[in-house]
Length: 205
Image 1 (cartoon, rainbow, N blue to C red):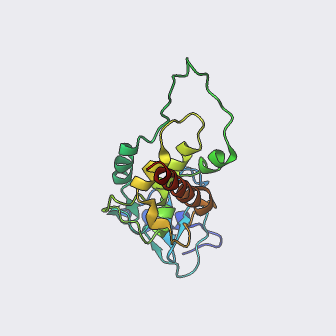
Image 2: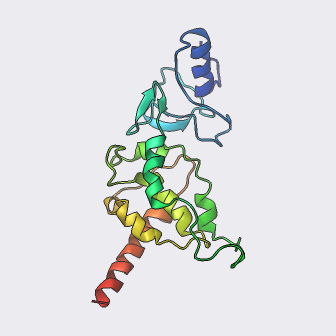
Image 3: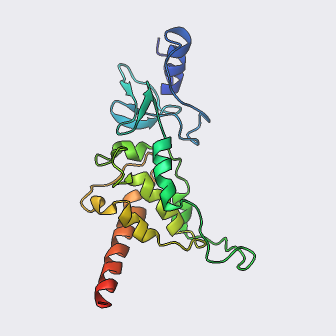
């Protein structure tokens, strides 16, 4: 029985407790902070922990991701892929030589609110976890977090090119269920910087 104002997660737990103890799904914080519980509800990514259930709702796993069982997908292939881009701060000087500057731009703070829930990957029709030529929106968000970090020294723009950001030129926009403007803060700036970089390289020929 679906009680009034039940969340999707509560219904999944009820099914697990009373109907099918083999049902596999993820959850953690229950206040949309961990990003573990995201599933498709009627075809759209939603936080199961805060999304209210509706009659005849269809609950399915996120799309375009390697399914482990039922509603659980494997995050490991993506993070293994990301490793080759050094997804951590790379400094020119050690903190001892150059004291840490903690004044970060607002873009950095906004992007750091990402919960790595993979909803944006599921909503991206061009992402395929089996195709390493395109890192998908989450891959670009992880690069942009470092691009905007004043401590990082690597060329994240060139990395975005290697990750296949040109596939996003005619994209209508990435869907983030937390409201992070991926197109505005990540895709568009990287594409503009790539264009500037290309123009500079031509001038230097």
